[in-house]
Amino acid sequence: MTTGVVLEEAQKVVDVARGKAAEIGVPMNIAVVDAGNNLTAFARMDGAWLGSIDIAQNKAYTARAFDMPTGDLQPLVQPGQPLYGIEASNDGNLIAFPGGIPLERDGEAVGAIGVGGGSVEQDHEVAAAGVAAF
Amino acid sequence: MTTGVVLEEAQKVVDVARGKAAEIGVPMNIAVVDAGNNLTAFARMDGAWLGSIDIAQNKAYTARAFDMPTGDLQPLVQPGQPLYGIEASNDGNLIAFPGGIPLERDGEAVGAIGVGGGSVEQDHEVAAAGVAAF
Amino acid sequence: MTTGVVLEEAQKVVDVARGKAAEIGVPMNIAVVDAGNNLTAFARMDGAWLGSIDIAQNKAYTARAFDMPTGDLQPLVQPGQPLYGIEASNDGNLIAFPGGIPLERDGEAVGAIGVGGGSVEQDHEVAAAGVAAF
Amino acid sequence: MTTGVVLEEAQKVVDVARGKAAEIGVPMNIAVVDAGNNLTAFARMDGAWLGSIDIAQNKAYTARAFDMPTGDLQPLVQPGQPLYGIEASNDGNLIAFPGGIPLERDGEAVGAIGVGGGSVEQDHEVAAAGVAAF
Image (cartoon, rainbow over all chains, first blue to last red; front, side):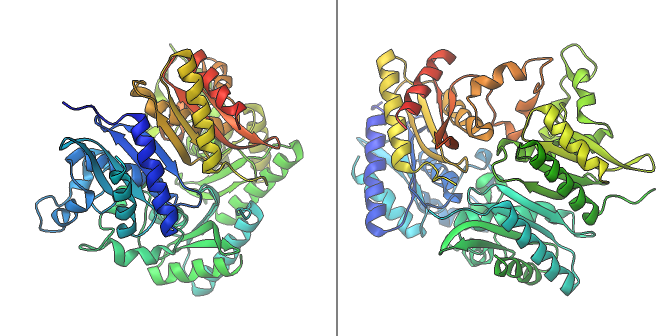
C-alpha cells in the first residue's frame, strides 16, 4: 500500500485550489480527506456559501468512498438507475454531483478533494486544479 | 463586511410578512436567520400548518446557505439536473422550493426569511413582502 | 379544555421577557411553545449566546412536556435518582435545569416559555417575568 | 459590531497552533469557526487522534456557542451542578472540557478555536497559542 495523503500535501492541494477559485472569482469551500476518509484540511474562503461547508466535505468523502469523481455517480443515482437512493446511506454524507475527485498515488486512491461554492462545473474545475497539484 | 440582520430588523420583517399573510387570508409560519444562518426571530400564526414550523426555518436556512431564493434551487434539484440529491446534505435542513429569500444589505446577503403555510406561490409572496420591509 | 396559547399572547410573553432581560443586562434567547408543544414565537436578542438558541427552545419544550418548571426536573435526573438518563429521550430535546416554565390558564398548562443566555437563575428570572405577563 | 474572523486570520491561528503542537510533540486536530459559528479552517496533523477530528470542531463550536473557554463549562456540567445534562442539546455538538477558546476582537467574541489530540491540558495549551496569534 502506498502512503496516504499527509497534511502537508493536503494543505498544498487546498492552497492551489484556493488560487484557482480566486482566479475564476468564486469563493469556495475546499476539503481534503486522507486514505482513511477522514477530514485532513479544510478552508472556507470569505463569502463562500455557508451551505457548501457541509457539501464540500461530503464531496471529498464521497470521492474517497467510491474512488471516483463524484460526477461519475450522477447518472447512476437517477430514478430507474442502479444506485437510485444511495444518498440515504452513509449517514447522509454522499453527494452525487461534480466537485469531488480522488487523490491518487501510483494509481491508487489515497485521499480526495471536495469543493463547493459555485456551479458544479466551477466546483469540478477548482477540484481538478487541486488534484493537479498533488 | 456589512452588518448582519439584528433582532429589531428581523422582528419588523416577521411583522410585515404576518400582515401580508393576514391580507391574503393564509396563516403562515415565518422565520428569519441572521448572517451566520442562526435563527433570530420566528412566529407561527394561529392555525398555521404545524409541518411548516420546521419548513419555514429550513427555507430561511437554505436561502442564506446559498444566498438565493429557495425557488431558484427547484429546477436544479430535479432528476437529471446538476444538484439532484442535494437535500441529503446539511443534516436534512435544505428546502428547494419557493418561500425562502435572502435579506441583503449593500448587495450582500446578511440573513434570510423563510415562510411556510400556503401554496409555494403564497409562501414566496409573503416572504417577498417581508424582504421589501428590510 | 381551555384555549391554548395564541400568537398574540406568545409574542407579548416574549416581549415582556425581553424587557426583563434588557433590565438585568443579559441578552437572551426566548421561546414560547403552545398547548401542542409546537414553537409559536422566538426571539434571539443581539449578542445572546448562539448555543442557547437550541436550549431556550428545548426548555420551553421540556416545560410543556412535563407541565412543570424545568428546574423541578433537576434533582430527579441526577445519578441514582428516578429520572436519571431521561435526556436521551425525546430526540435530545429535554433540558433539566432552570429557564423553562409552563404557561397556565385556569390551572391547566396551555404552553410554556423557555429562556437561555445567562446563569440558570437569570434564565429563570426572565422566564418568570414572561409568565407573569400571561 | 466588529468584523468576524476571516480565513486569513483563521489559517494563521491554525498554523501557530500547529507550531505549538509540534513543539510539545503531540499531533493535534485544530479547528476554527467564525462569528456565526461556521467552520472556517481545519487541519489534522499527521497521526493525530481520529476521534478528535469531531471533538476539535465541537470544542470550537462550544467556545463560540457560549463565548467562553470550554474548560469553564466543565464544573458546571457535573452531576448536581447547574448545567448537568446540557450535552444533550445542540445536536450533540457540545464539549465541556478544555481545548476550545473564543477568539475576541475589541472584547467581543468573533470566532473560536478548538483543539483535540492530547491531554486536555495540552489541548488547551495549543488552543491558547493559537488565540495569542490572533
